[in-house]
Length: 237
Image (cartoon, rainbow, N blue to C red; front, side, top):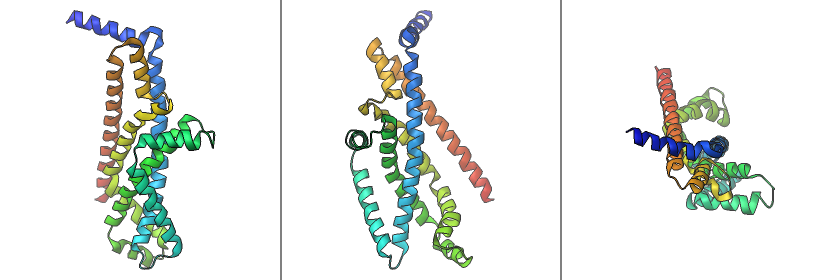
């Protein structure tokens, strides 16, 4: 047992203490959190907008020409984004669009790429939540003097949010793990940081530590969502 502990101690010192290699993990974690946080915000904004447009189109007896055009572009967006790998989208957005044309940095490009990808899935989640709310709620809001958008924001959206919270939380968790491919555009995220250490020490310990950090973050997110769900259930009583 003592021999095993000494071996683990030597491996830890080799992988993280020598040459201050732990900086790769800390710096990579910061990049991963920035990517995830920024992409979540962008994805929710895009997803909510697309969901409202599609729901408005589907619920209208005779949608006007603007809604028809917007709905067409939303359907194209959903088809393209959900039908292509996130790695390919990341490469196209950075090397073809945002890098050469807009001269954006890697983190900004990563946030945009992951946010656009996440927005397609959030849109369908939110749309399902909106459709699950009884149609009488819309009629009730209109009878109170609200217009369509006020009813959607103040009455429909809060109920839809409660219905889709578990699915949205799962999307955040998936997004957190998807950012591990950011190394394809030379972003030193958490996974890339661990791989750099592994390449220098030829040891598996950095990858185990990276996996453990991801696991801890996912468990933390799940715990926060469970607490939020309990509070929402209490508010119903």
